[in-house]
Length: 471
Ligand code: BGP
Image 1 (spheres, rainbow, N blue to C red):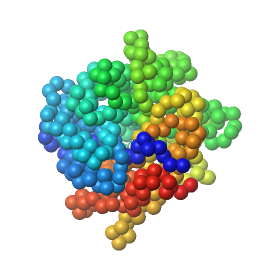
Image 2: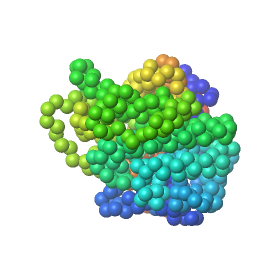
Image 3: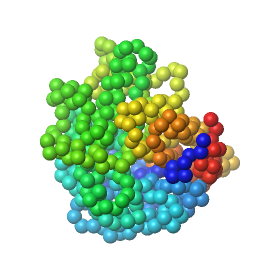
């Protein structure tokens, strides 16, 4: 089966992970510019000051993407380039950069798919309380409107937020991301609601402009499965999905929070500080979502916790997706299973979990339009005689694209697939060691770009609309 002609084959990046130029042309500092400078926070103290210098080399990068046959490029806008302090005066040079980037994509017929917020928050807003402060939401809506007005004539796909669960949980539960707070579920839930309210207002504003594009947001897609079919582990999976999926997807797609979670949060005093008016806006906005973006890397295998909970110390290594941690409410823990395959960073490799998860989503939410906005393999690529032989990445993407095809066959409405990542980039906490790209960046040789084996492979997949994939 070929993928339909209007299915987009793309690849993604995010501003902080590629742009560098952290203070060039009037850009203001962000939470990440500050956070990475705290000793111990990132692998070998790596930071995005220069990253892969996409800001200055975007023409070369887009040319390579075009050569690969990429149909769409998902990138994010750094808020602090447009509004250096988060609010107030516009930095024209920031607008110019993204105009140039967009025009460069369009020159090659590459569809720009733009994320408005991929975690880099202007520093003054971070200092004022970040997403705990409702004024950050007000500032975000204004920033989004500036972007719509500046770029919306050519950009027809906008993602408001990337992975709320990650910046909320790593920011306020594990402390691995800014602002580095640990074990504060009240703040965590407040942040999620403030973000969803900002999302709702933003899509309402977008629709008022009648730009006739699509708008949605991207969530982590990490379906939970019990480690076995016992009643308690089926329960553990249901509970995990309620908290990690329904809590995030329901307010966007149904316009209301899941009752199961709401009741429990109410009982434990963790309910967000929401108002009736905010809830009404969320309800009003739900039908205006055009799609949902899904970032799938792995599923979660869960086991019910009985009795004493082992304390797992949060480290940089185990804070971003590897199994082992108990849930905040000590109901379940995620488990590494002997019969599953894992990456070097202990992320499970499961195309099967992807298919069943997508089907589960369809059953729960109906015919929603999905884009897979991230999927890929973090690895240390093998280089032999200068050739980058990233065969495990080829296998990974092959199998996950087959999974998408299978899900489509089973009636799931998926309209595009964006590999993470278009080019090697800064992994938030893992430096440049954990690679994801089709294009290699040589940090020992002036950031020279080189095509990997996967580059040529993906080109063929796109050209044949998936017919070259191996089932
Ligand atoms: C997602 C983020 C991306 C990217 C990816 C891989 O959660 O949206 O920005 O970083 O994960 O993560 P990591 O670099 O930690 O392996």
